[in-house]
Image (cartoon, rainbow, N blue to C red; front, side, top):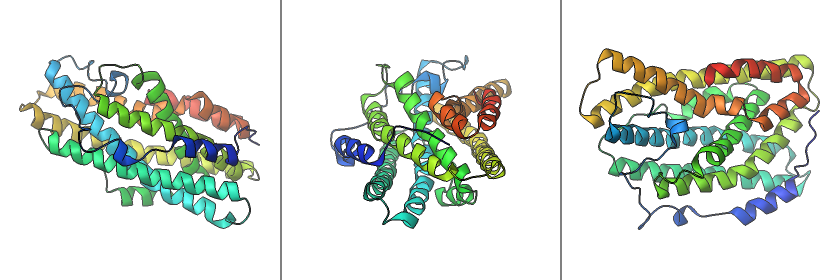
Length: 304
């Protein structure tokens, strides 16, 4: 059983205090600066690609920033219906629970809109077209075909990963474009409350499960991770093609090999590994299943 100090009333109050509008973050004179990197190198890992010059590293970094928006936007699109499905059966049981989860859903819808607006500005200002995995509806359908516990664990890990990304990599990086950094900061602010609600959802889903049901949940989590990993492999190919178009040159075979190797691990760390090693994520899993925690810890190095 999971024990936590989180509660719906306090989390709702914190969410209301932290609330921001999309219009305050993007639009008008709030524009992306395409002379600067968008992502910290701990996530983008462009500096490790030794055949790129300075300008090419910025180009690839910005491609990765665009991918960050579209990938998290895709994830938000299956979080939204999952949260609504979770709240619906108990609408009349706890007013604070209902309001907190509906606020959660509203914020996820807002994040989807935010990412779309930033993506549109990127597309207008970047030198070439960048393809991304999708469509979101199909990926969401595939994810939501798995059991609720598996999906909830993926969401919990993803939310904790965004906290790790901002606090450990983005916050103190003064080289980043201020506008893109503002997006990541505001996303982080609201996701900080979502991690608490995710934990409470996992708690409610695991309270009365048998060991076999928990094992199925972990298997579903691993299966969704495999689905995401397949998508990341495709995204590397899209990023390679986008980079070659933007740079105006075709990479040699040894360069493409290095690009694929470094960038696949960068994507795996960003979207999978950084979640799987987060201490709060592991602590939650360890409370309802120490063996499940151990299994995830054993999987994590492949995605670092």
